[in-house]
Length: 365
Ligand code: SF4
Ligand code: SF4
Image (cartoon, rainbow, N blue to C red; front, side, top):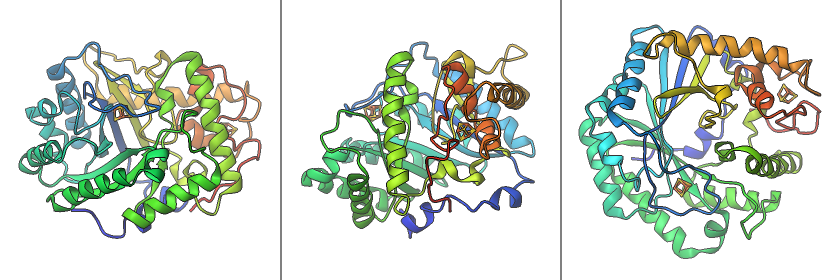
């Protein structure tokens, strides 16, 4: 089933007071790369689709052990995002979701499951995977991020029909879905990412599916110079949009309730945990600067929590070497979300989010 009033509920990023109200709770988010291969060929895909040193038993056991540890503590396991590829067409989806350790990840019924998909797999493939989930973890509350493409969505009627028929499959499932659309912002699209086109896309998505459009900075997944070039394009697009289009979009990067003081976001790939490098939770970077060191042969929850503290101190030190961060009103938010670790690792000195120099004015709700 699809939850009611999607747009209304998902368009609210949270009020600034939320942080204070929830400060007695501490939330853990895990993004785990376990899916291997992808049956899709999206333009602008930056995902490394093949996991090199893949050991499903080792990896699922590690994550499940950490999930058990979080659930046994007074922390709350808020979300587990399974990636990096298309949930319905990755080669090993069935292997992952039928593994006995998978169920353990969702022992706490409040833990959300986040999956990404283009929804272009056949109806049969989608139904098959949903059936397995319905039978083994029927209580799942699922955030589905539908990877879409601005050209296809705005020009291809067949694509829209296909999405509607897949939407119907989600509706018929007994699992509970919160779907949202998401685009990779990259220079190759024919329809430009100017504020008018982005507004048109967001309005179409609202009209057809009553849900929201998200801009995921998935470019952070690619490395080195190519990443920097694409990052500049992404930042330019977001800045232009937030300057000229603030009334139509929720710019969650300026929302102080996203500060992250009371949450820990970690990424997992090939046996290692990494700190999440960005304000948005479902962002991955596997650079060494984000690697979480383990004190013993296996990861423990203390390793993850300590890495957050250590990173905070390091970033505060780096802020004095930047051009805009020291004294910026968002410094605490950015630091708790590791933005300055990313800046330091990539020798970025100017404001990474287009906020600290007073350029952008988004709508913080
Ligand atoms: S579904 Fe995801 S991983 Fe697969 S091609 Fe598209 S963006 Fe890349
Ligand atoms: S200047 Fe930009 S990157 Fe630095 S703390 Fe402020 S908002 Fe964050």
